[in-house]
Length: 469
Image (cartoon, rainbow, N blue to C red):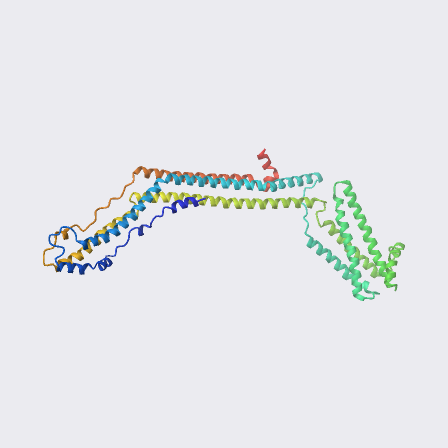
């Protein structure tokens, strides 16, 4: 925004006050003009003649050398004065540029605010709707407690694997008897049975949550799942125990597998060894644990955890949008304010510098007087070198021209009317007023935006909807 304003000041092309006036090296001029030698030589020939009333060519050469440096310094000074004068004349133009900068800054910031309002509409609506959905869900099912969150698939699967490993490891030795592959074969068999036992128990446990539901059909589904699990756990683990009894009786593995179901149906509790009863106990314990894990992995009330999870996600999404919006708007606000203050500073400093330069309050004017004094001093010194050498070698009286003044004509700087100064100062004040008003407007827009964005609790209560209405 400030590039055009900066370019206007860069176009001034002002010379640093210390480099406006050239340095005069009198020793170098004396050597180049051979003043002492020329003075003695011309004195021996009584030149210039005693009747001369005008400077000779040597004196004119000295005056020209010093005069050239003097003219260069005065031209630089006048160019700086002219530039400062033009700057005062353009004070109104500078103020208009700052007006444009201020308007652009406010417009860009307002655009950013509107953009974020539009971008946050979705997250605001979703947060309000998911909160209303959870509220109605709680009221419908008479829930007044927070939902239990799902612990995560990693932990859930890890615990299931632990159940399988424990049951499989405990039963591996029992199933290794009579197995042609020994302990490895028994372990494989135990793991297969354990996977079936744990898997079906966990699955039925998840369906059993419906026992807590308020809908009759869902309650019936939950009751049916519990009864199905009881039947499965008992039948499956007792059939496995009968399978082991048949192996202990010396029946081959294939025969034991085929005879386990008929043996169970004929006499479910007719186990012949304590090991088989231990096998039943282990299987039922693991089945109960797996069933309870499946039933309580999520909230006991079906669907409640999902509703709570959606609300948490809506809150997180709104929080991310709100954080990004506030962060970006804060950055844009601070950047706009810094640029506006920079514009104010540049204009005020530029105008103030021009006023000081044109009304004799800066180093430029003091350097000018010192430079003019230096020119007169250097001129007098160089003329004295030539004239003294000439006098010492003359046999006649010195000419009247040696008594001519050793100074240049006085320099009178162009003055600027005081009205332009007052006008420029007034424009600088108006620039500050414009910048202050723009900064105030940006802050008001920023604060209004923050209020309209609303915090999550305001959105959940529907305050943003009431405000719009």
